[in-house]
Image (spheres, rainbow, N blue to C red):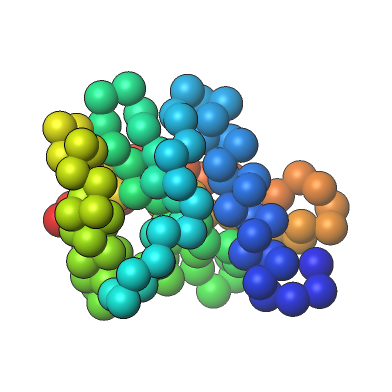
Length: 122
């Protein structure tokens, strides 16, 4: 991967494929609004899931999940609120925030994925 953007697109694709293999249904990738971005919006049976994907080449200084600060959580919550305003039919589902932390060299083709359900609350 040459650029950070390419790494981001690739890791989001990996995360989406992984979660789909676990039974989740992808609704939207890269939902943007003025507050920020949600990497993946998915449906897990009867729950709407907002997924933040984080990649770290190495966990020497902490996992990707550990980089999600309270400020980032606040932005994700605000962004999810805008999503729900724009997609009113989705208000019927309880929502949660998951994190998929990916680590290891991408070139090797087998990075480690760690899915954290209900990583934080709103």
